[in-house]
Image (tube, rainbow, N blue to C red; front, side, top):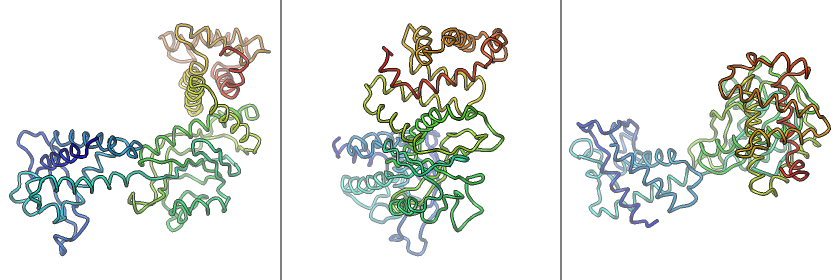
Length: 437
């Protein structure tokens, strides 16, 4: 990407920022306190201002964001919305800088922000403004520590070694002290309460967390949190699939609450402008009805699964990841939603185009090779899946064969599809080696 094209776009953007609303209604109003410095107005400091940016200007912002990523590949870990927001805020923050603009001229006489520039050389004006914008765009990229509370789960601290994922015990003072050196604001926060140490009445948690799921990741705030959420979902699906044989009521839900928010710490608070943020990440853990004590042998089994994932062919790797994600969605869901999500996981693990029923049933049979009942169970479960997806019944309770299925299996379709999906995920690479899956 040639720099001259970016500079030209930056100049064009300033021409689309207006001091008054255009008559054709083709602009959006912006209100903000403008100016980081007091170079032009030392007595006023920051001043409130209303301006309008045209719809053409918004498209130019998008163009600049795309061109900036092509110019600086480090910005690939930021989303377009964050980049566009930062481009606009860079204009706001430098609007009172006499090196760029005269705000009195802009307010009283100028037709656009461009007309209020204080430099006659357009290219030099655009180049200097781009340098400011570029620096601001770089500042949104940071190393992040994203934390999610694991209520009723007791675990030793454990570094998975993949995807930046680790489990952290709230009582492990040494590991939290180590994290403080990289993420400074961790030091003023309490892992036992999920709140700032100096403000015990504020915070996003209900109760306390004995363990935290952590992900260290690089990017802009929103992308980092989203990607961390994906990686956390995968890990929790694997953890639960390995815990499931010892805890049959792992999927039962209590009347308690669980968090859908994470807490996020940047490695350089001064660069991003804050030291921590609580933000929505989605429900990653269902409200457990029992306390879970995780032992190292379980964690090492999960680690071994990730090692196999790392060396797997691309097709097997993608199937395992998608199967893991939908397994986690099912764990947090209820009734018909849980059933469907578990079946999507089975489809991801075993399904093949134009042979979906055949390959899923075959995959279920291979998951339980010594139990011949699963051949018939699999056909019943697939029939229920079709009935739900194709309008045969609106709920599992309305399935006409439900009573017969329960009498014959002494079980329940949701329970059985959960058992097979979580077992298949846990054993996926072993099954792949032992068959043509």
